[in-house]
Image (cartoon, rainbow, N blue to C red; front, side, top):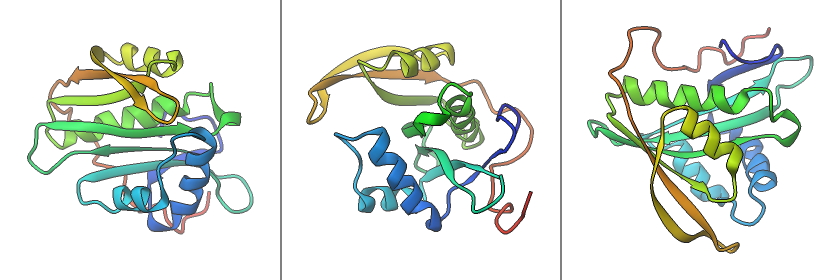
Length: 177
C-alpha cells in the first residue's frame, strides 16, 4: 500500500486480530474504549469493513493501527466507526492511510455520504478529516462519556468510485515479507 512507511502493511482485519485491536483500543481510548463484544460485533458484521496496519519485520506481526467503516448494502450512507494508531507510530501517515482506505471502500460500495464523530478536543483528527473534505455539520454535547466531551459530527459528500483495485482482501495471510 502506498503511503505506508517501510516495514508496515495494510490488510483486512481477521478474527485473530481482536486481541491486538482491543489492546490498542484500550490504550488509545482509556476512558471510553469499546468492549471486546462490541468490537467483535463490528469486525464480523456483514456491513463492516475493518482494516489493520501491521509490522512486517522479523517475528510475529504487530498491529499498530486499525480502522472501521459501516454501511448497509445498497445504502448510499456510511459511517466511519473508529480509527486508532499506536502512540509510538503516530505522525507517520498511518492514520491517513487507514482513513483513505475506508473512503475508498465507501466509494466501492457506491456510498454518496460518509459521516463520523470526532472528539471536540482532538484537533489532529479534526484537521485530517477537514483536509479530506469533511465539514462539521453538528455538535453532540457530552457525547464521549465518562469525560463529557462534545463530538463534532462531520460529513463528506463522495465523488463516484474510480476504477482500480478492489477492496483489501485476506490474500496476504500466510505470506511472509
